[in-house]
Image (tube, rainbow, N blue to C red; front, side, top):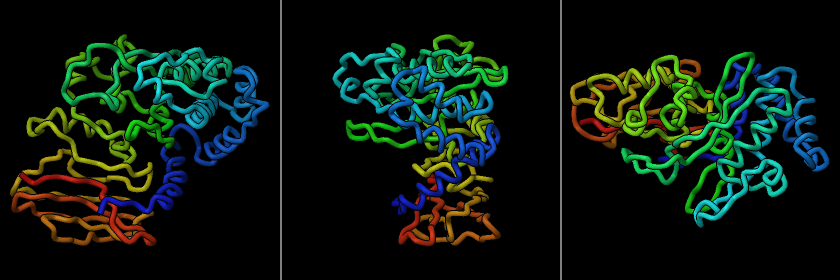
Length: 338
């Protein structure tokens, strides 16, 4: 049920990922910037200055410059998993990272900062805590373990994490997989996974979180916000008296494959409640809710699927979608009724 027609989703994610950033860059311009960035030749990548000049030639605004640097670093630099697991030195010098094409978070952040500055942007590296692969949910984090960036775009500081944007660790090895999620995420979104040592870099519109509050926040899959879930709705859920400590389980669908327009965000749904689900997707031809092994088709109107479910008994409930070419449904959301 949770298997994905990966090639189809990758294409959908590539296209819809552009739309996800449309608020910052027009989708057409974003594609143009990305194409130029990924076409960088070895000659243009010899030095940081030559690379910054090449990337800047394809950008016409602050946000396009930031995008070009983010896209290049996330594509060309591989995570140094060997150094990470062996706890050996991995250079954070941006010139060394450019030559080796290997880095851990400090190297990614240092290279982004240097390239951004050479491109005429104001940028800095942020040090702090992140709930990465070694994090135990709910545990206290004794030492800072991550580095990411802030970049000033049109006079406003915004956040970027090229390390998490480049891929992930699986079974001790690095897997390259570009992610839109960490290109200019809102401070309210990044606050679930990243906590800076300097509270000023939380950049939150509300009061800053304490480290204890950060550590107690529920775990969120890195692809959680690929579903278009509004961070403000997540915060409302977490702060509600009915919240029992866990958010809805999500799965690794690329950005834009499905957008949650209406769905409960708590993992636990109360028995006797009525729940409404509304999902927008141009990728799925069919969607259905599976509730205690019974399939309930969702109604489709245009690209919007909807259904109302009476949760009458305890059990498991999931929302699933099927593409025209896949044999099985992919799980989008998963709950328990309790």
